[in-house]
Length: 204
Image 1 (cartoon, rainbow, N blue to C red):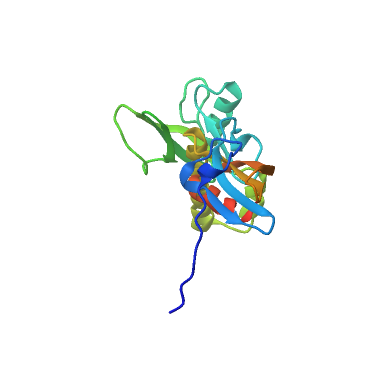
Image 2: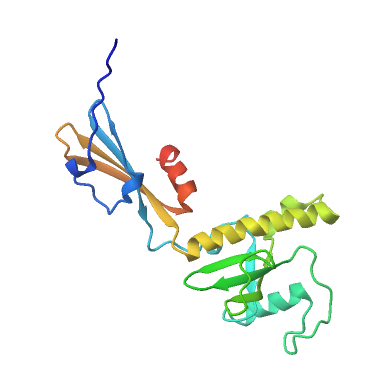
């Protein structure tokens, strides 16, 4: 019977540079020492909708300024001053509800948590950005509408991750044979625990 000996290394044996999320730590032995990877919380993560294309945009009816209100009313066909219906709703616009109670959750109108006190109906409107409008070319009718709803759901998921602190950086540290720190790499801008853990395996 062949017995395979496996050595288990403990993170306590190393002095890592950042406050790691404990259950994301992996330690690998290399030819020159050790490699440790882990996630950390990114406390200074930017709103992904400020600097990423291809996610569309949310336009709100209050708290975000006149420009957002104008776009909100334009997309829904409202008069900006009276809130009366004066035109048709843009077929690519998707109404968004907001639930807020010890956290924030955006969802497609009518699909998320519906609470008499904590849910604001049609708090925002999602609309494709130029990148997504290009992808929507050639789609019409229900196919186009369904694709807009799909995109809006993805945008809600990303926004909720950012708004509720599911923001991460991935870290890789290298150590010599004596377990002394040699170098490290860190990359931020990851949202969602599952996606960030996958990125930790492949992106660094």
